Every structure is written in structure tokens, then in C-alpha cells.
Image (cartoon, rainbow, N blue to C red; front, side):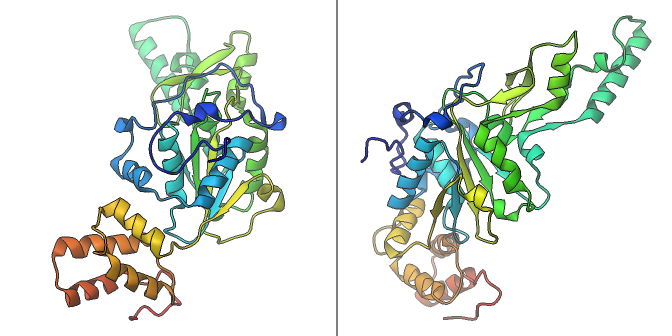
Length: 350
């Protein structure tokens, strides 16, 4: 394994991230105050069981291992494209678990997603409501002193960082950020991401204004994504220290701007062949050698004529195994569980 490779793809957690080579001079960041890393990736108490299983059973290809390491060393986002069911999002969980980088920060993209959604959410209406409630309580009890918005708490009490905003906090170790299905976004989102991912920093205008106030505080505590533990943001500015490992997934439904593409390491996942399918089945279901061969053959034959996803094969293997069916009934059920994903494909049989 090359000396610069810290991700191995073997799913065994380790501290190899400590040996990650220094970043290129143009990708070095110095954000403060430095935050300790979150819980280790192999401490799975805070992670949902399905994602733990996804991380443990991911079967990496040599190409994906190499390009993950390239993205880590270069401090660049990894753009992962490929058909549905090829493990694009699972890759992020596998890397986080093996390198002990803590829970994955996930940003699910829709056509309505904006850059602000990923950075932070601020609710001025909740602040106004809290201020009115506090003023009403003060009036009822006859208290004097602050009135209005001051009684409802500061801006920071009604602001929470999003997954992208949290990933760019100045952690000692990189966080893992999954930006899932970015090809579903509005046309402007990839370009909007350029500056934030290039500079590794962003500003929160609401906190900037508060910091300029004569009575404002230079640093405030806000809630980060996925936790109720507050983190300190100094003067409304967030700058990373360890650039996050960013996985951007796409089903290939659209083209991206050249300026966006040149800032990414690109990995194209292909449909798994027989050998990789056998490994995937064994990892997920612990199937004895040879037992799944028949359904794998049917899956590969069918996939030659239309689009199928690997999890359809896993569903068929699991259910036919649980049901204890004879060969003919098993095959008939498997056919029903493996319809083509494309409406244009013939889904009536083999």
C-alpha cells in the first residue's frame, strides 16, 4: 500500500488518519478555536443500526480506495457517480467508520435545497416569540430590566449549524460530510458551493451583526448538526482546520459546471461483477459459498437487459431464504423482487 494511503477499504477501524500527509500549501487551513474530534467511528452507540451495517459491509474496489485517499490527501471533495444501488452513499459511512471520524454528517439534496440550508438555519420568528413570552412573564411578575428581544435570548439561541456548516468547524480531525444526490439540486447550488469548499470557511451574518454590537460577545455558543452539545463560533466566522472528507453523490442525471468538476476528485462506480457481488452478498448475509450463485446468475442475466440495483438481489436472497421455498417458487418470487428500475425496460421476465 502506498505510504500516502490511510484508507484501506478493509472495514477494520484504525487511527491511520493521524498519518495523513500534510495538505498542499494551497489547501492548508488554520481555523480556531480548535475542536476535539467527535466520538470515534467505531463507537457506534450514536449511529443507527442500518448505517452501522452499511459501513461494516461495504465492499470497496481498488479504484475507490485509491481515489478516496487522493481526496483525503488533496483536501478535495470526492464526486461519486454511478447507477442506483452501487454503494455511492455507503462509501461515506465506510470511510468514517474505518478512519474513526465520527458520525457522518448527511445533507440530502432536493430541487429546493440552497447553500444556506447546508450552512445553518436561523429562526427569527422563534426568537420574536421567545422575546414576547419573556416580556409577558416579566410583566406578570413585575420584573424590570431587559425587555423585548433581549429577554428572548441572543441570536445564537435560535440558530443551528447545518451539516455543511458543521463539517467546516475547526475540528482536529476531518469530519465526513455526505451531500447526497447533488444532481437533484437547483442549477445554482453546485456553483454556490464552489467558494465555500474552496475557501473552507463561511460567515453567519446574524452573528457578525451581533459581534459588532457594543454589548455583543466576540464568541458565542451555537448548536451543531446532529448533536445537542454547543460549539463556539468566534465573531460570526467559521473556518475549518482539517478540511472535511466531502462525498458528493450523483446518479448522473445532469452535467456539472467545469469549474465545479475541476475542484473535485471524481470516482465513477460501475455495476458490480460476479466476484464483487459474491463478496457483497457474503458481507451482508453471511451466505455459505455457492448457496447464492443461482440467484446471482439470474440477477446478472436480467441486469444485462435493464437497470437493477444490488439491494434488489439482497432482498431476493434474504426473503427466499427466510421463506424456505422450493426452487421453482424461489425463482418466481425472486423475479417479482427484481423488477427493472427503468420504465422503458421490459420487466416481464428473462
